[in-house]
Each structure stands twice: as C-alpha cells, then as structure tokens.
Length: 507
Ligand code: 4AD
Ligand code: MG
Image 1 (cartoon, protein in one colour):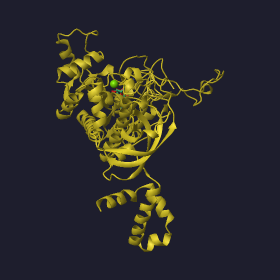
Image 2 (tube, protein in one colour):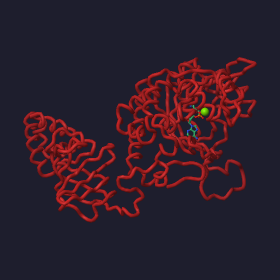
Image 3 (cartoon, protein in one colour):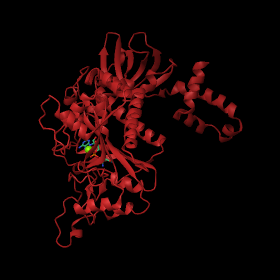
Image 4 (cartoon, helix red, strand yellow):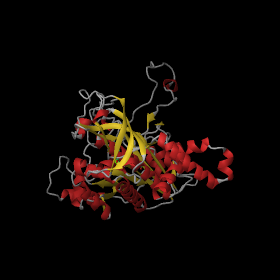
C-alpha cells in the first residue's frame, strides 16, 4: 500500500501523469475526481508496464520503491565484463553518485565503452552488494553516442588533477570533480538569490555595457563594432554608442541609482577587468554579487550583510550538496572541512587598516612588498593578517582616502585621512569582498570629482545626492573567490566553467 501511494504521489507531478490526464475525458476529470484518481492509478499501472519511467540518476539511487521499471540516460563511468555479467556505472550529472547497472553479458556491445552515452532500461532492485542501496537490472542497453576511448583525454578510474583537466574546457564537465563544481556553483547561485530574497532585497539587472569606469582603475575592455575602419569626423561618429563604451567592471553605480527608490537592491552577474595578471585569484571575466543598502550610516551594517551572506550561502551548500563539497575536501584540499567549520563557528574579526599596517610591521616575516601606510595591502599581507588573526575571515576597515575610488565616504579624520571602506579577507584567498559607505554629501562629492576632472562625466551621479538623497553603502563579493575559499581550490580558473584571463579565451 505504501509503495502504491508513494508511486502515485510521485506520479501526480510527473509528465507521465500529465500525459495520462490529457488522455482522460475532460468530464471525468472534473465531475468525479476520486473515480478519476482510481482510474488514473489503474491506467498508470498498465501504462507503466509498457513504458518504463524515465528517472534522473539522483532519483533512481534514492528510490525506495524497488521493483519499478525505469529508464536512465547518462554517460558510462566504468564498464566491467565478467563471464556471465556486465557491470556499468552510469552518471547523468544529477548527483555525484553513479547508478550501478547489472546486465547479462549478452547485452555487451562493442560501442559500450567508458565515456559513451547510453540509455538503459530495466528493473530497479535492492543491491545485494555493498556500496550502493539499489542497482538497475538492465533488460535493454542502447548506446546513444559512442566514445573514442583512445583519444578521450580522461581515462577510466583515473583521478586527473585540476591542472590536467583545465586543458579541456569543452570536456571537463565529464569528470567527477568538475561535475561536482558545477552543481555547487549552481546551488551557491540559488543560495545567494534566496538570501537576498528573504531579506527583502530587489534584484536588479545592471548593464553589461556601460559608459562609466566605476572603480576608476582603468582596467576596461572597450566595446566597439568589429572590423570597422576609424571614421573621420566627429568623436561621436567614431563610436557605436556615440560615446566610448566598456564592459562593466562593477554594477555599483547603477545599483546606487536604484537604491534611490528601494531600501535594498542587489545584482549578480558577470563583470570584466582587463588585468594583465596570471594570478591564481584574478580573472578577466568573473561573477560579482553586489548589494546596495539605503538608509544606513554604519560600516557595521554593511559588514553584517557580508557576513550573513557568506554564512547562509555556505550553510546552504553544506546542506544541499554535502557529497560534492566532501569530494573537494577529500581530494582537492584534504581536510579543508576543518577550516570551513572554523570559519562557520567563529565570528569574523575586525581591525582597521592602520592596525593592519602595525601588525605587518611588527611581524618577523619578510614580505616581498614592504608594508607601508598609504599603500595597498598585497596578497601576501592579506594572507598573513588572516592567519595572524586566527584563520577566520577578517574585516579590515577605514582605508586611506587616496586608495579608494571617488565614491568612498570621507571619515574627515585629518591628518590621517581615511574613508569608510571595508575589505573582507578570507583564509587562503585574501580579499573576498570590497565595500564602502558612499559619499552622500553633495559638496564633498563635488569637490572630489572636480579634483579628478570627473564632475561632468558624473553629473547624473551628483543628481542622486540632490533629489531625496539618503546615506547608503554597499559591497561586492567575488563569486569565484567565494567558491575558492569554501572548496579550498587554489586556482580561480578551476571554479568557473570557461575561464577568461590574459592570453587565454578558449572556446
Ligand atoms: O573590490 P572591488 O573592486 O569592488 C568593487 O568593484 C565595488 N564597486 C563593489 C561594490 O561596492 N558594489 O571588487 C569586489 C570583489 C573583490 O573583493 C574580489 O573578490 C572580486 O570582486 N574581484 C575579482 N575576482 C576575480 N577576478 C578579478 N579580476 C577580480 N577583481 C575583483
Ligand atoms: Mg577591492
């Protein structure tokens, strides 16, 4: 009875059910619901005998109702032929686990190899051997797509390292590690959207093409028509958009516009930096989560959102893809789960930039770049500070005025002269988030823009401070760096499907 009820409940939501219902006379569906249910169940039994249910592998391996006739589709992860029996492991990317398929050796065929794509039908049974709860006793195996195992870069049962699989961006999703990474990336994306949704933030699609350089660092990719000769005449005739246009380095300024009418807004999209860097934490194209909060006057309120976002996304990942995360903590960075546990248990630390420089200067470590007040913290400094403060994430606040962009709020603390800016530094990676309170005082902002000759360009930005301006602030979190931090991945190129960096744009 339990089994039938279970199957029926599952069925109610399945495409098989929808197909069945459309086969029933409409009147019957409406006028006599319970009779229709009985009839549907009977029809289903009949229908099911003829057409096995198509299941994803994650559904098949967690199925309680053994005895069902099912079909799975996926890619062969292992093949073992014995005298009487053929054993396969089939994976379809829906979970880390593969489904064990047992068939008569008579079903073996030449094209059934490691890496081939297959459709397998049969009966789901309780597995007599250890290692899996259920297995599929196959009655039919169709090879949908063959795989040339000689040229296929991945070999059966071999665990290739991340550097090796990175050479095959078009194929690396076929490996267990990258398949796990893609599921984790997808779940982390969901978690981030859920976090902001629960907190009442509005998601904004900020533009990918923009005419501003938000960070003012000049790391811009210009966008122009391909293959166009330079035209003579007016400057505006030279450009498709009449003005020079770029791929966005940050959606912050657009978010600030929208934050003029909402208490909290966020964006999550690709951002671009023309950094001529081969480092393990820089990409030319990366995903950034950015939030902007209105009616706030404290850096602490921004830091709270950063910390909460980190915790809730990580909790979600640990709960929703424990096997995938465990793979990284076992094979990519062994015992990294201990570091993640520590980050989740302890409160994040807070120090000022000035304190950070003092700590660095009193350290016995020799740095390649000598730490000095007024200069940017280097990755080696950031990593040292995090370790020094207990290997948990560390907020560094109140940076020198000259180090941060024009929008950062002046602390008016001469002679030191700092701004209300905060970076969140995390173990193993360094800077994960950067945020500031925004300068909302019109006169101060105007003066700063005038000094840099940007007052005309940013006339619209000054407008924001004149029409119902409120104190506000926000931050950006590098999504790939977040994944590096939680999974213990050393190279940022291994946490994004198709990495773009200087001198490389494969595919
Ligand atoms: O610190 P950044 O440059 O801050 C901004 O862009 C602000 N406008 C964000 C805001 O306040 N809305 O960048 C934010 C984060 C960094 O802390 C880092 O994690 C990541 O983006 N990031 C990169 N990640 C990968 N590759 C790069 N080249 C990156 N540059 C920045
Ligand atoms: Mg930064």
